[in-house]
Length: 289
Length: 52
Image (cartoon, rainbow over all chains, first blue to last red; front, side):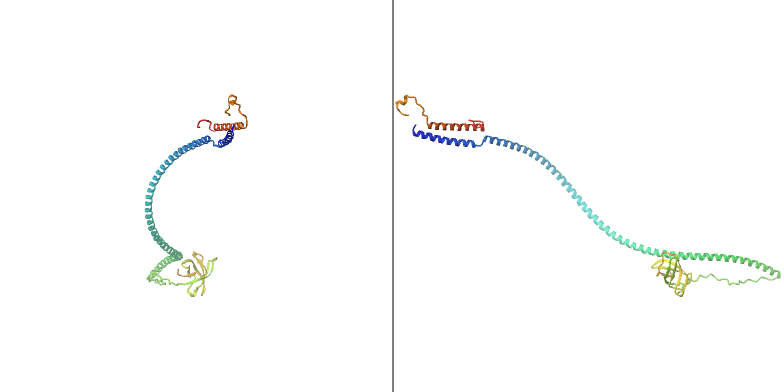
C-alpha cells in the first residue's frame, strides 16, 4: 500500500468520523417537527373549534342584542310618545297652576279683607259685649230697685186696703148717725145741715215732684266680708242718710250695692246687697250707677 | 501491486495491518451513524424513505 493510500485512508477516516459526529449531533438535536406539526395542527383544530363556537356564541349574542336593541328602540319610541304626552300635560298643568295661583292671590286678597272685617266685627262684638255687661249690671240694679219698689207698693196697697176698710166702716157709721140725727131732727121739726168734713179734701191729682239727683260719691275704706259690712268715706255731712242705697263699681263694672245702716259726719257703715263680685277697699261708691 | 508476473499467478492475500483496522473503524462508525439516523428518523417520523 502506498503512502498516498495510507494518507487517504487516514484522511478518510478522520473526515468520516468528523462527518458522522456532525450528523449524529445534528440528528440528536434536531426538533421533532412531526410532533410539533401535529401539536400545531391539534392546537389549530382546537383554536378553530373555539373560534367556531365563539362565532356561534357571537351570532347568538348578536341576535339577542339585536332583539334587545329592537325592543329598546320600540320602548324608546313608546317613551318618546309618552314624553310628548307628558310634556303636553305639563303645559296644561302649568297653565292650570298659573290660573290657580292667580285665583289664590285673589282669594288671599279677599281673605285679607275678610280678616279685617272679622277683626272689626270682633271689636264691635267686644264693644257690644262690654255694653251688654254694663246694661246687665244696670239691669240688676234696676231689678233690685223694682223689687224694693214693689215691696213698698205692696205695703202701701195693704195700708190702702186697711184704710178703705176703715172708710167703709166710718161711712156706714156716718150713714147710721145721719139716719138717727134725721129721725131726731124730724122728731123735733128741724132739717139737717150740710156736713163739712173736718179734714180738708185733697184737690186735683198732681204729679209727684221728681226725685233730686243727689249724686254722692265716695270710696270703700274698710270691709268685713264675713258679716257683709262695709265702711265708706262719705257720711251725713255729704247728705247721706240711713237706708239709702249706694252702688259699688270698679271701673265700668258693677260690684255690689250697699244699704246704709249708720252714718257719721264723715263716714258711714252699710250692709252689702246684690253682691256680683267681692268688693275691695278703694272701690268707688256712688248713688248713681 | 506490482506489475510482475509472479504476483498475477498467485493468490492475493489481504494484508492485515493498522490501516485495515482504521478503515474497519471508520466503516463501523459510518454504519453506526447510519443506524442512528435511521432509528431517529423512524421514531420521529415513522417513515424512512418517504416524506411524512
